[in-house]
Length: 225
Image (cartoon, rainbow, N blue to C red):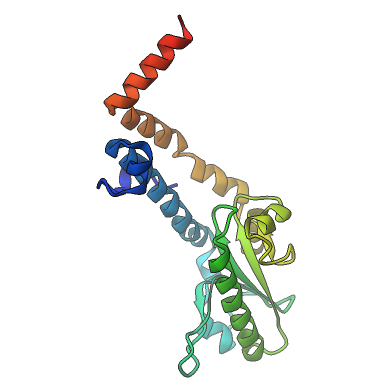
């Protein structure tokens, strides 16, 4: 998991967090937390790729050309070529199950809430790629999935996307790991190892802010009088 200590955030007074609290130091700390959350989501795909056996990691060109390397092939950051002036579509992960003759196109999220406008664009992009892939890999059926890695309730995933897609398009982290052939619980525990360090660092930085310390002392004093 990403570490707060390695994130910079915004140090200027124009940060929305600084305006929210009226305190630049606190605003920067919260900004660093937000930056770390974003980094944590970005690193998830790298962690998954690191757990997948290298002999199963393929390329879009290899799959389209029929260079079969395994019964289950994985393509990370999959993209189709541009067609004329139209931009090519993409998916975070494409899983090719040759035995079932299926193609799984996956958009990976660490959380369970979605930017609905962005989700609509991602869905349209993956639909475009799914159609293209079915034309290239004849006889295979493509399906589209939005994976909320830490959510085990598909209804919650759909709700987080404001109903932009159905439960048929929702995928849990457990389901994704089964398709990838990796241990979901092991990966979750690996990511949680750095949580105590983040908590300790956040509190230590919080206690460096005089106004925060003064408020804590006043609160503590009031609670124990």
